[in-house]
Image (cartoon, rainbow, N blue to C red; front, side):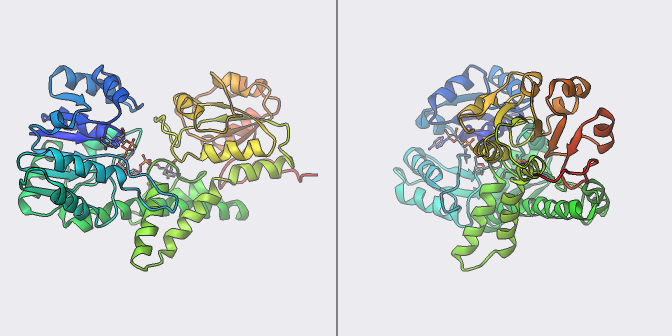
Length: 440
Ligand SMILES: NC(=O)c1ccc[n+]([C@@H]2O[C@H](COP(=O)([O-])OP(=O)(O)OC[C@H]3O[C@@H](n4cnc5c(N)ncnc54)[C@H](O)[C@@H]3O)[C@@H](O)[C@H]2O)c1
Ligand SMILES: O=c1ccn([C@@H]2O[C@H](COP(=O)(O)OP(=O)(O)O[C@H]3O[C@H](CO)[C@@H](O)[C@H](O)[C@H]3O)[C@@H](O)[C@H]2O)c(=O)[nH]1
C-alpha cells in the first residue's frame, strides 16, 4: 500500500519506518525542515535502538522517503496517518492544534478516496472532530473514512514493540476501513482488536492511566515499606507472581516521567471533568507521582541537614534508559530542587546531555564521564537505570568521591553489594543498611 505519515516524532518516524519495513511504500511529512533534511540523509533525529539501521535500509530499498511538501506527500496516498504531537496545555488538557492543522492540510490536498488513520493520542471525540474539519474544508469533495489506531510503543524499545506488540487497536467508522487498516498491519502478525472510534480513543488513555496507577501504587507501598522495615523489591516480586497482578510496572522508584504518562493522566482527568466526572483515583495517582519525584531530595536533606555547598553527582538524566528523551524527566525537578537548596550539581548521562542542556536548571554542570561527575562529590544520586551505571567500577568510584554516599532512585544495586563496597546506600522502599544520622 502507499501510506503518508504526518509527523516524524517518535511515533511518526517509528511507524513510518516499520510500515516500510513490512513492504509498504511510505512517505513521511513534517513541517520541520531541518528534521526532514536529516532524515533524507539517513540520520535519525531521536536516539532509538535499531531505528537508524532500518531507516537507511528502507531508504536504500526505495520504499521510504521524507518531505515537507504536503501536495507531494498526499499525492498517491491510500492511507494518511496522523502522528503529530498532542502536548498538554497549562490546565492539563490535550492541545489539539497540531492535529487540527493536519486535518485542514488533508482537506486541502486529497483528490481521491483515502483512509485517515489517527495514531496521535487524542481525547475521546477527537476523531469525529477531525472528520468534521476535513468535511467542512475539503477543496475537492471526495469520500474518506476515519480510523483511530492508537499507538502503544515505549521509547527505548519502540522498534521491538512495533514488531512484537500485544495488540493493535482499530476503531473505525466503517467495516471496510477497519479491514483496510487490518490489511496494512497484517505482516506484523499481531492480534487485532476492532471496536468503535470512541472506545479505541479511550483504550489508549485507560491503558496509560492504568500503568501509571500501578507505578504510583507500588511507590506508595515502597514508602510504607521504608517505615515498616520491609523490602519493596521482594514485595513487588511476591505480588507479581500472582498472574492476576502481573510482574510488570511494579518497579518502585522516583515516579513516572516521559512524554506520555504525565500528560495522558492529566488529560484523562480533564476528559472526565468535561463530562462532570471527578476521576478521584487518577488525581491521587498524579499527586503521588509528584510527591515521589521529590523523595530523593528529601532523603538527602534528612541525611545532611542542609545541602548548602554540597557537591552532588547526578547519574542519569533521561526519563528512562535507552532514550535521550528528557520530557517530564524526574531529573528536571530534582536538579532544580538541589540547586535551589544551595547544592552544586554535576550531571552525567550517556546519551541525553545534549537535550538536557536546554531543559535543566542552567546552573547544572555537565560532566563528560561518570568519573568526572563523581570526583570530590559529597554524594551521588542515581536517577536513570542505564546499564553503564550498573556496571561501573564501584571500588574506583568510592575512592574518587569525597564521601561514599549513594541515593539510588532506581534500586540498581543490592544492599549486600553496597555494604561489601563500603557505600552508605539510600534506596527506595528498602531499609538502609546504615542508620540515618539525625541532622543537627
Ligand atoms: N512518544 C511516545 O512514546 C508515544 C507513544 C505512543 C503515543 N504517543 C502519542 O503520539 C503522538 C506523537 O508523539 P511524539 O512523541 O511522536 O511527538 P513529537 O512531539 O516527538 O513529534 C511530533 C512531530 O510532529 C511534527 N508536526 C507538528 N505539527 C505538524 C504539522 N502540522 N504537519 C506536519 N508535522 C507536524 C513536529 O514537527 C514533530 O516532528 C502524541 O499524541 C503522543 O501522545 C507517543
Ligand atoms: O515499573 C515501572 C515502570 C516504569 N516506570 C517509569 O514510568 C515511566 C514510563 O516508562 P515506560 O512506560 O517504559 O515508557 P514510555 O515510553 O513513556 O511508554 C509509555 O507511554 C507510551 C506513550 O503513550 C505508551 O505507548 C507505552 O505503552 C507506555 O508504556 C518512566 O519514567 C519509567 O521510569 C516506573 O517508575 N516503574
